[in-house]
Image (cartoon, rainbow, N blue to C red; front, side):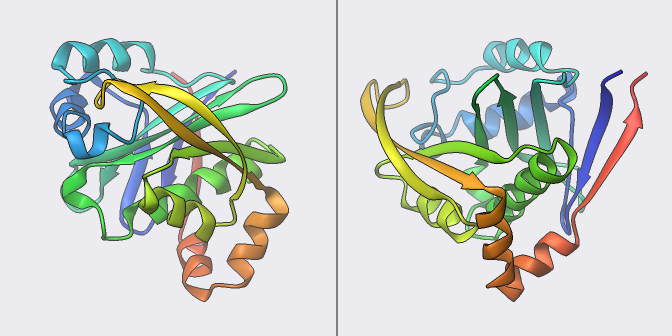
Length: 199
């Protein structure tokens, strides 16, 4: 039986999406500065959000999607997902532009990696960032990701093909990054992964 997962960081609760999150998701993904770094419909509308959330109301053994909700006031300020295939996995994170520069992205990357390596027992994570997204590049490298190649994809917000830099994080590289940074280790130590039996 698939279990319902909650991930708690110092400032966030990561939990399954609900239709009550539509307005917050549209606010975040409807911002051009966020959408230009992702492959999401643009403009991102309430219809897009309802369709996405309806498909991700419950996590499955090969597809996890979490809303990132502030403990302080319950607002959803971002999200993270993880798609698991036979020989690879994919996904990433996003943060509402109004909440960037406050360390939430780092909390999300570390929480995602801890969940993948310690709960799902994956050996590596595959991600990427668009070539102009220096913020994502910095966050990924900080937690141990290494660049492994390039690809091309269509970005709806920019309405053109863009270069994606492909990255990979191994379990050993992640723990090495934690070992070399007291700040990252402190974030990691405050993350709790809670598993409840699904209804």
